[in-house]
Length: 583
Image (tube, rainbow, N blue to C red):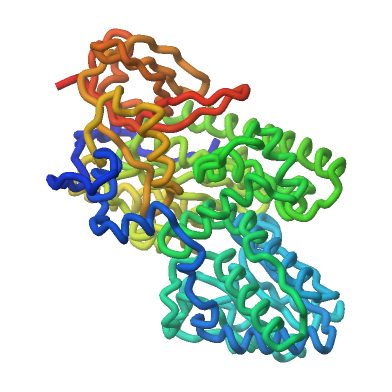
């Protein structure tokens, strides 16, 4: 292992619980108290707003032509159909790019386009974005029009190159642009700066869905086709990509994810259906957590590991028997990914045991597969509660490619940290809590020092670990009748997290350790009402983990209620966010 870390003891901090925004007013007629407290704590007060939130309608969707350049994009696509031009969809390799690709391929097929192919760069060997070599090959292969999905907004040079060789381009993307936009036929991006659509919450599949809606409407209105497809039929793709990209579940995203979960639960795509059957998800109502935590990672592992099968193959396979063979390979691939991840985690943990980290963690190794460094960073960040940077060292060129993760509730920013360490880096980018980086191995020690300098100051100033809860409840309150209402609050995701309830003075009746450092608990009230509760990956420095959980006795708990489906039975269980000794 070729790691770098500091030699001081990890920092710890107080864990603070606070109510989100208590509302003293009584609930509107017919609305249960806990549901009202959740909604009012999140700023929902009028009955009209609450009703629209609980029953999101497709009628609330904005006109697709409100997106800047949508008219230009549609006109070029109508011309391509009339001329029977060869079209290629160039999509990002991640799951929202792949979902957008599958969505648009099906839409073009239903709208009568005859010659449509696709291209996705490989995550590890090619990397993100439009590539001139690929553009040249596509043009040499007879493609006349390229439609990008989930990429291209910063590809000014690549678009100029495409223009120079006679390949027209339509850019659809949602990422932030640079000062100069690519000179494409159309640039459809709600975040392009001068777009007034108000659709900035859409990700790749959302923009692609709106393009399909606009094209469908135009072809119908101009009599080019006599009947269009049912737009809801595309939402199985939309929901996977949107939930994995973690964009805000507000406005159109909330409406379309709500309906998309219903569509995915009855999808006609054999690959998706067989995979859900293998995971025990088929035949049950789907939640956003089912898709984001249980289903999507199996597909994501395919592009991470590059083992001869890609996520798009599962979307497009049409034969049931072939779908089963693909799913068998998906699950085998996922086992390989898990083994690679476990090996890397064990190696990193052993090093950190011998060399305890200080204000941050930076480990790298030539034994770490590049496809799992983000997953390992997440695990270490959860275990230690510290900013974590994990890299894979290439023995061929001495370059470390890695991922960064920030602990929840601390107000720390990975991009700020890497900006302060930019002298040591070749490149970096991403988001505040999850980002990527690249550096030469000769700069590893400098990078470590810069991270320590940055976080040693920031963690002193940082907010204590904070858990926010929506309302106080008893275990008895969290019952099946309540859950029938609770389901109307979903889907949950970015900017509308699952509600958390504070349950006080409950007894830890049973403790059962699970694989991976997780726990299955039985929590009980004095009136003998009990609930099964799962506590995943409690941090090593958590106050209650310093002794045996069985000896703690009574605790206050922050919990998230959820249904568990197993062997045809539905049972209520709680997901523990945090525990502390009863006050």
